[in-house]
Length: 477
Image (cartoon, rainbow, N blue to C red; front, side):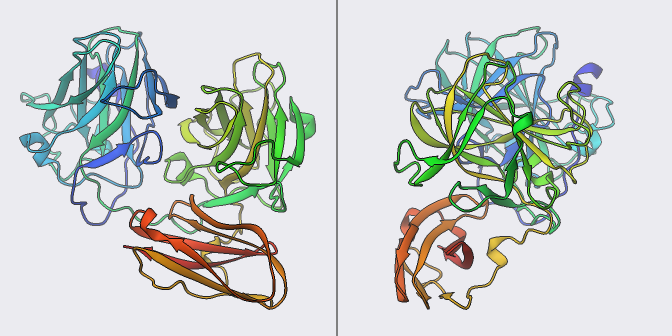
């Protein structure tokens, strides 16, 4: 059991705020991603096509877990992003349940959940950090989705940490087939767990999302041809204008036949700001992709070019992030999740971004890329804090605000200009696009947003006039 405890350590979380009011969806491996997975024994792909939809799970994507057969107690550590759990006593009492949608190659596989205080579990002495007992479920379906609901069993004296109270829990650990050397592959989706305390805003020195390149005028990157394996054509015509990507121009990248084809980019003017919030999956890099097939893996590595070389992996590599395509010959937006720390490289001062398309394969592939968002550069000011007017344009407040229905977004131009207007959520994801590079004459204008289609919360309305961004807040009830 001591070996088991050594496998489930993670770093401590810092949390504050008030408790949420209901059981929480931690991860649906699509749009809701409230947790990260800092320790996994085995292979955990966080965005893979659903291998077989049914009435239990009709989602297009899920997670794939191949258990490490060399470990009797292979774990998946589930870490809330910048948060801790609210009082978990209702889960021990059985009035609330931890659950997960699960697909197993066999019936009778035990799946276990353990609640922990990560600070105390870091001592590596069992059962330090473990709360109260174990939550267990057993599969009953072969190669089909089922919902596993976990039942709590109190641990005997010496098998839990009595100093960990129901208010001290800040991480959840999943164990598939504990006590065995099983090396099978399983699928997970819609992980539900205890309520989370509200998160605190990231420190101002940490990176936020920044648009790196839209191949139409915004370019915060330079492309390093001598380090890049494949062929790149910038600012080419969009091969398939659609709702997934209405841009007129995109980039085309042709993957080479190298096993680890590398597409290398460097930020212009400054290094990346502190990428901690990307590493804990509070913020995600995104990239629009048009690919020939679903299931193609994309990987982004953030690194220090003064250390990282072509033949010295993992030196200089700070962090790796992955996403997987789900569409065939259609635009989709990939959201990248942190998966690995290759080396102990600081989270600051990183100056190189490497995109790998279908790593560890040999096939030549042609893909199209657009609207790449990544960690902001040092000195970058988030759009939400920029001015609401210039000498040539003004962006008036939305009305009504707060709103739950139709909302007017008025602006005025002192001279003809090209205008874009979009709405972004508090993670920087675009949730509505009202105007896209459209010419407008001088004078007053108004765009209309149907806020009934948006979830309650705070949003940023961003008006871009001839490349200059203005913004206004919007509250949706």
